[in-house]
Length: 296
Image 1 (cartoon, rainbow, N blue to C red):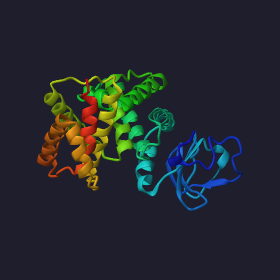
Image 2: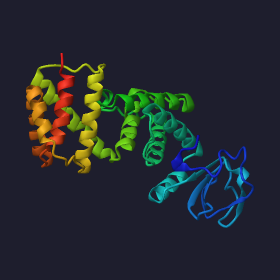
Image 3: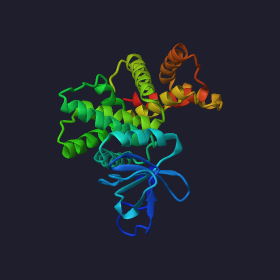
Image 4: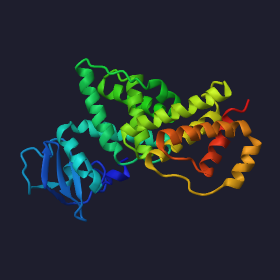
């Protein structure tokens, strides 16, 4: 299945492919070139040896194409640069991995994933072949705070192992998970580290306040972490809940005074670190999730 971001003119050059040709606009390597579609949008056409001994302006039968990628304008240049320097097999592998991840995560990922995950897998493969293995210092946090994405990372690492015969393991699965998080949240990788640090700080406050440890297998914990993750994302993007739910917050505060006191500690931390004071709606949702996750 070719993803919507890489909307196909036809799939894999088989079955109902229209009769016609692609006009080469720019050659990327022997296996890829840039052309345009019927709307004049740039596409990247891939196939084994498809551009060999060709030049710009040449016509190539559509039947020779194995994959046809239609890129958004924002990412066109970056993908073309990537396609020019890596073997086509990595684009095929990445497409499979992304499709697996979207199925597991139950939703589409930001189009940037097709660039970042392909580049990461190719670079990591080069490192492994050179005997350079990088440990992921955030492995524990990623396993704990992004369980779904980490599960997708483990599946992706297994696919890489089977395809490339490389020992992709837990550390690499965690790196891949961060790319999935990035594509879900729509923030840059460096911001993902900030998001993770903020999640860690919030969890530390809750643990200290209630003198407890979380049960990472519980549904309450899963809901709590999911809320905190997107709460942290909104802070990074400067997107906040603006509605005033002070009356409902008063009711929740009366019902869960200890959870609300914990929320106020988090509010003070956010104001100190981010210069933003949480509104009543943000405090309301945090209090509800804290009350649930700390319920014995």
